[in-house]
Length: 103
Image (cartoon, rainbow, N blue to C red; front, side, top):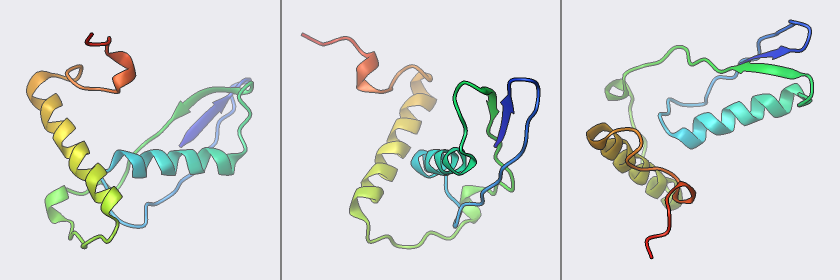
């Protein structure tokens, strides 16, 4: 993460995930933890860059059986949403708040 501040200064903060992950929640949580640890103040922050490094192909990563049923359900749902987006485009599925009511 590279936050940029008013006046042109910037600095880097890094965090490595404990295990490989393609799960949006894991990446989002790591970014929020970095921001919390940095103690950023909104008024001074003018830009934010998040960068992923040391990426590996998902097929090369061993997958451990999880006992967290809720997390596994989110992973399955996320993979299904990725397949829908790949087939029908990035706007085919999203948060329910952005879609109009059906009735």
